[in-house]
Image (cartoon, rainbow, N blue to C red; front, side, top):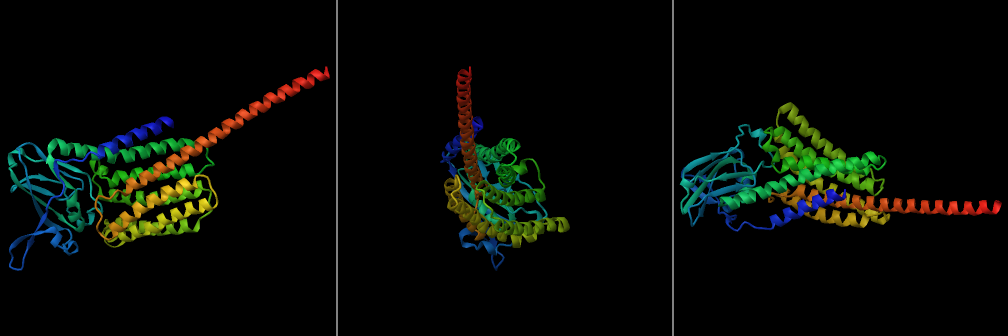
Length: 400
């Protein structure tokens, strides 16, 4: 366990240090314009901030453009941290890239897919350049434009690799935690919180694998992607609450049952829509924000359980309260931004991952304390056994 903790610490530290190095040679704040047709059937390019996002016609093709300047003719690239389906790129009027294609509007994912790293043809690069993107036009497309970076190829590639490493670290470390704590469960089957923690780590690995777009490096099925993301996030919330309830030895059941019932209804609706209509358009359009809103009282309920644990003077309740309050603040803030349509590139799985690391620290501390107690008890028993032998020897001497 010590070796695994050191391994996880090294990975997270190196990634955090890497992520702190900003790519100063990329154009992060690009001024995007959208192609529109006025009442006289004339083409007009309007700044995005002057367009109401909700007025865009969903699932039609939108065309965006931006200008960028370079001082030297060298290899340049574009990095998109959010995937644009049915995307075509043009540089200075010449098409050079076509992305993943989805013809069925019912299959457009709620969240974007894998990160794209695309090299500009060096023959097309000029001092003053116009980049045009034609892609499926839905509300989230406009928000995804803020996750596009343009810069020198080596620096953009470095940023892309760094992003992929971080996205990969979360599911890998989560899965390693599953393997480790399942061994603890096999040794101590009465301690059910080991099972709930393993369950939480497993679904976090599944969720982050889909959410961060790693899924699209291996598969293309949108329905499986959506189920992995929805079921993974749902089970993360439920298993976290079950872990807190079990670890603090609480008897809270009704709140958990209500949360499970609501999540189950939403999940059954999604699965039923997929089975009978081969779509999740109704869920995506009408129920997804409800799903996000339900997560807020569920997370607050988890904080409430830790407070109850503190009142009952449960071990590690103080540490757990601090972690849950900090976690809840960032996640609820992100959820509210998502509900009101202003969030982009959210880090909700990463927030759950940090909570998982906090849980891991608590479990490791508890295991260490129990081990030390058993060790002291064992030493005391050996001491008592030695004293017993000494007493018996003296009794035998007096008898003779």
